[in-house]
Image (cartoon, rainbow, N blue to C red):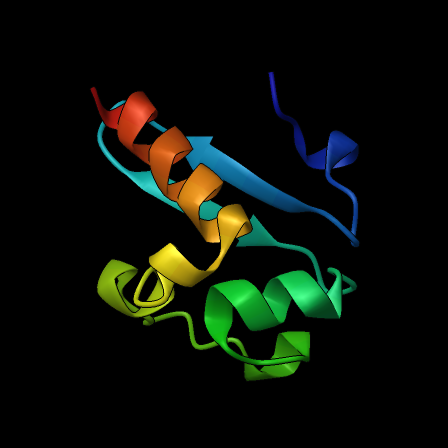
Length: 77
């Protein structure tokens, strides 16, 4: 079970509450992952209102995004 004290500031977590999938981003998350996911290189520029379509727009060009997209779809179904 994910708890506040187990979250790390350099982590990115996929959270699911049986209705929605959330991505929790730590303040010190890897800039390369931030760039792939949110098209920014620093935490403070992550737009919390970014849509799923925007995140996965380049899914065919990134094995990381392809894997994440598949994982999220597995969780949904």
